[in-house]
Length: 330
Image 1 (cartoon, rainbow, N blue to C red):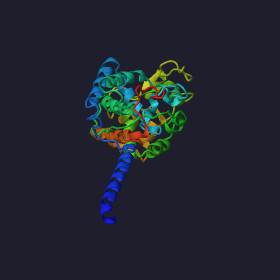
Image 2: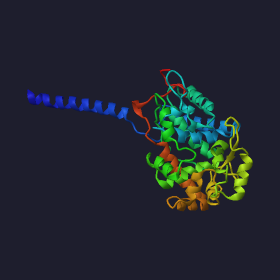
Image 3: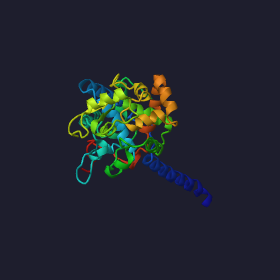
Image 4: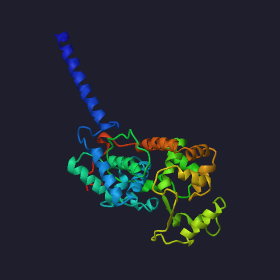
């Protein structure tokens, strides 16, 4: 009798273990390629179309999508916590001084609304951050980055208190920046490539004047320093005024290697730009990227992939927000 019951007991135990494994697997899923292939087959195409449409209406949105990826993923996780607005106990990360100059958050809603119309409650805001960055880079004539995985979930809170310690400051040292990237699994070569996003960036005068006044930083090219003083004529610029200088004056809206050529000629805006070109840990990569745009694009693509997979929330670790500005409970 006991022997007759054994197969049933073993089968019951196997079924129980299978159920437990399924629960564990769902709760701790991994990112994967084409995650929405069944739940929302047109998701990535919808995001691409919206990014393209917004670019032709508001060209600087493409730069915003790229910056969003960095600011979101470096703080805790790639979980769209950056997009949350302050409401009911949630303090927005956008309030941080590290978020100074960030904009175009309102256009994320246009992308999200298009997805909600096609597939309600399906595509996460965190995946919108990652995929809009990928597609924005293409609009900026950068590399077409394949292999961006999806399946991220959105955070149920923000991390304003962690922003100041996670996002490098404008005058941080190269060692500090390399340490920040290393802490999230990004090596030196990929870090140098990711800093090439400065090719489409700009620096507000409030973060620049310390290199110009009261005396000019001797590491700056003298003629370039005069150009910068023209752009920033006061040592005490008004933060509310949009006074800035671009990192790349030649191709300011193109993700290319002109940034590296500029910093090798001592025409970088920030101290880290000069250090990047002269520090023995990074200068070989800078020189190679300055000489070879293809190599820069290859490493930049690798860096973006690494960045986009930083500690994602998956499965039941997060949620899919209905509105990227608010957690669902709000």
